[in-house]
Length: 241
Ligand SMILES: [Zn+2]
Image 1: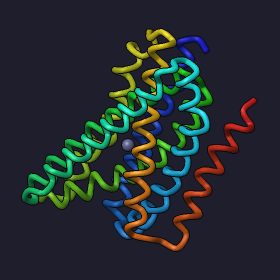
Image 2: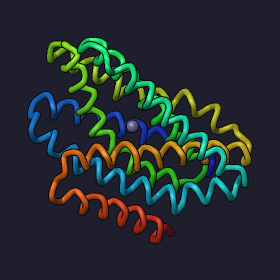
Image 3: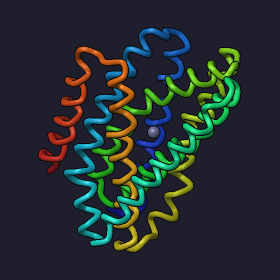
Image 4: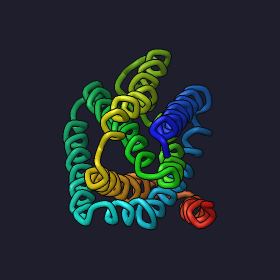
């Protein structure tokens, strides 16, 4: 795929991510109960799409480009483990500090989400689309969480609305557009390592972040959302071309 087309796909998904994130923020602002209920299902759905797309496509593609991609995936997983540990350690402080440090974590995370679109679409259109579907679904939850965290941190509702948008929604296209010129110039072996790293990040996100959080507020049909996510990813993959 020519570079220009790759950029169009990256832009489409990164901006859709921002839109879905904003919808999450707006919905939790207007209809808190509904947004919180929808959030659990979307997190399970996103976990299903992400784990299926990474294990059946992203990771094998990464290894095909670079046999060391497994180590890069391990590095990505460890990176997520420690950055989450860091955020958790920081969030044990007072209410205000909780809001600020957790929101820093969300900001960095959303920025990385943006970089991921640049990496996956640079590898192939289908990898970008499948993992993109999972990422966009989890953006809704991220918007809801960002707003809730700011509110908990003591911000007034209107201000929390604005800041949640700036920190959780806007950072994703920012990450995508900043990373794209660099990622699109990478050689195939290096791109394989980058995709390996992303695979590790997404495995962590799916198994250790989205699923446990959804399980904590066990909903009757959350496993259906998870299985639906897996089926959708496999369906898109099997019907490509
Ligand atoms: Zn995210």
